[in-house]
Image 1: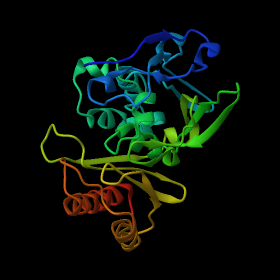
Image 2 (image 1 turned 60 degrees about the vertical axis):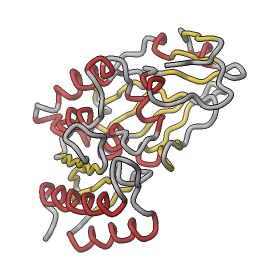
Image 3 (image 1 turned 45 degrees about the horizontal axis):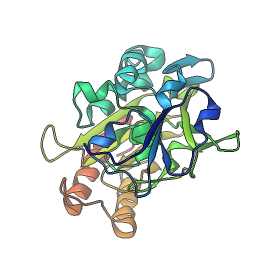
Amino acid sequence: MDLDIDTVRVARTRADCVLRPGEAFLGGGTFLYSEPLHAGVTGLVDLTGLGWEPWSVDESGLRVAGTCTLVELVAGPGALGAQGPYRGLGIVRDCVSALSLSAKVARTATVGGNLALGLPAGSMIGLFAALGARAVVWTPDGGSREVAVARLVTAAGVVALEPGEVLREVRVPAAVLGQRTVFRRASLTPTGRTAAMVTGRADERGPRIVVTASVSAPHGLDARDHDMLDRWLDRIGSTVGWFEDTHGTADWRGAMTRRLAHEALDELGGAA
């Protein structure tokens, strides 16, 4: 790792989150081992010093801080997923395991960092999009706004965050926590980067399917039946196109996504 920066500041209060020229925010920072800094970045502001509670559950639902590490996510909400009232969180462990990372990286990498990078294989995107979560974003003027996680990533590596904004937390509605959820994943090798991922849940309207990794941004559908699902997947392939890189060709990813999506719909009880 070769960092050409001048300063690293640890944020202790919200006032410390006002960026100076050339600065960028830092969550866990594990991306520094694999992704180059954007041109012009000369300083980093470490958000982990803010001391946010990693996660909490109350009558409104689940809240996960942007600085919650992946290990904390598994140990907390992931463990809750084994209980009936929180069975919707049963896919947390699978979604974390979908990331190609070591135990050491998992203790440092954060939920907010994974979301803010906006990479197709960022499985926190598929997890929280399937759970109907909303991201709470701090704005530079001292206010805040919310955006659905399903709309947070707009293209590969592009997120709906303006300069100086901080991803404070993600919120999962209480009604979702007890709903049935599903997870499916494909990669070229057992431990390879995720090439296609399908998550979903069943609510009062029926099954909802979310596709990530094989597309540059998440796509979701309230799928009533398999025919509807096929037509939707056809449109993605023809109008959006399947993502392609060294971890999988477009055609293969499209085929895997179709198979996984139908499996997911069957598990959620979709009509044949």
